[in-house]
Length: 113
Length: 115
Image (cartoon, rainbow over all chains, first blue to last red; front, top):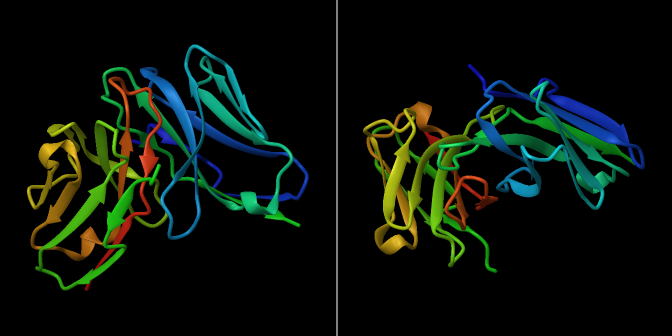
């Protein structure tokens, strides 16, 4: 049973507009969440993270929102740029898990010029 | 910061052969992780070291898989008697800290193809 779900396999956005990527989780023990970006033939690159004691974290064009009651988080990219085109993975880590990350299946973002 | 490096980047082997991959983490990082990624899936956790001690193993890590991290520096992942189902991208990550709430830095991965 998947503990971290990214229900949209792909998303297409126009350059300059907002990209919103969504992620749901089922395990209430998760207390740390991360977003990674992955280009083909490369390893995942860290984007942004959020602890469960917060509901928002912002870093430049990237903002992550956490709704603990709904067990939902989202990544907002504003404005979207063609270089943002990649696969985005949501990951979660829980208390007592020693830090291994549980990943979703990813969402492929395409930003069109 | 030279980043996490992995060698080789690609490996093609015949079924039944043994293969070994190497991961060099960021030098001051005490934690080292191995993940496996197959097509259309996110990375799946295999095993984790804190310094030289292997502290956790996933049920995905069958007895054909073994990992080591001698002296708490680089790590090796060996797969014995490879099977076609072992074909995947093998990712290594490292982090610094004593808890799970830390960012993991990933290497470029080793793509294994078993024919």
